[in-house]
Length: 202
Image (cartoon, rainbow, N blue to C red; front, side):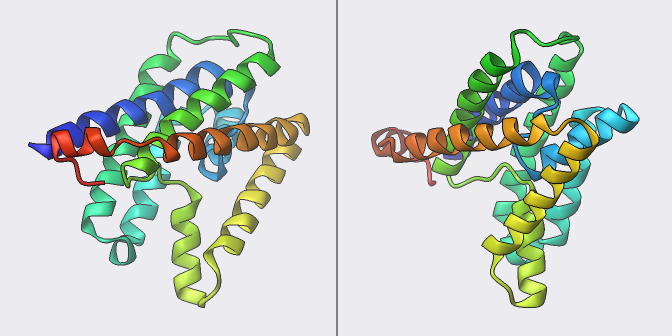
């Protein structure tokens, strides 16, 4: 039965992540990470749906990294990515323009995004993204994944700034700063009582 409760919590967290992207970040072409940078670029240049780009990219990377991540991790991450993509796809039709000025949406988006990802991390799941590609490259080359991830995200963010607007780089950095602090805050929340009550393994 714990699988059901874990699915509900992870589904909620993934939905929160999708809401942050759709309502606050994507209307201003602000990426929340490396994968989101590609989604922003494809949408800006080819009008490709954010949800499709995110899902295809993450699904492909997950399958490629399956032997390192393990079956359980791949399944849960793919579940989270799918819920996020469906949320984005459903809500995008209702969001035709930014809801607020860019700085307010940036603040709200970063906080909400951080809450969603923080819950995922706290439950031992992942939101996918370029960390998967960094893992693949680090395993193949024997290099440090952190440095690899920095180069990947940095390059994609720089490219997004050049193609869309240089301000995107500044906004994305601010989003990362706020979002990561929210992730750390959520990660430190004591949910052991909740986990033990519903026998959730995280």
